[in-house]
Length: 390
Image (cartoon, rainbow, N blue to C red; front, side, top):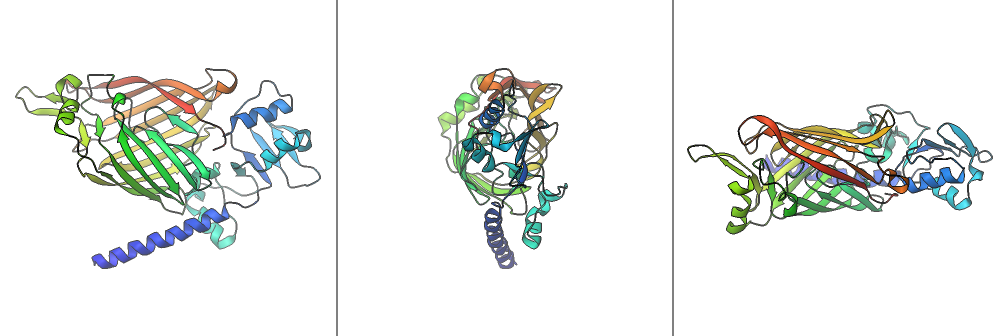
């Protein structure tokens, strides 16, 4: 029985790998009528400045029509301009722009699951609003770096080959963990190492009994090649925290352990070290709400803890641009239930800083050291948009 399961798993992984390879090779199809995803602020601003649009909007809707070789146009916020009005170098950047929403194809909600199958069978695929996000090999590409928690910053070296970095776990709240990770991506496989930045949990000396403390280790995961909706992986802590260091983490003066009146442990921060290992998975659905340039809803199991929530970047409402994220962790055998929410406001600077920086509050709601439900952490979080053409 075990042998049959093992063989089936190997065959599944091998076939999935070749499907990923096939998918990656088919991503380069020529698109002649498309909307440019607003992921390159400098290019969007330069296009509008060249057409004397003032003030330029880095999130403007830009639609390019190359279907008629004698009448190629570019539409900006509904205003139509001839593509020849732009300098040749800028036209070349627009034509080769990597983040395109294909407007020649029909889009439906099931595309995130069926895109690859439809493409293989029919030579044509239905694309959702954000093409990069639904790709199992390109979904990691992400220009946003959040100081605490959230999605990883993802940089493409060559399409489906790239790097990603993150501070805090994807599900952690403010000042909750010392986790830091760096990863390598290729064809849907993510392999990386993690370590700790203790400065991230040191500023506050109370209400730390629900913290997550890491040593060092590695993790590897794989996004199945039928769409960017399911990722599973393995994480292992390879380093044991020494007794002296462990005692410096877990003590009353640090707020990481709470005792009952009889001296027994009431609450205690969780420590991941000493060969502990876990199978993790995440089921997600990329979606855009209120014009967000990146977003998803998800259900996941991470370190034997359940998580559900959502995260959206650059939502627009009543003239404001903001990020909104929520993560819920129901109670488990290791930690108390916890609910994290982050609201980051953009548009607080002018010029290039318009979308490069966002700041706002992040809060965690859980059981306090007194046993009641309340805010255990409230802190300022930051988000940077690093570079442009990711």
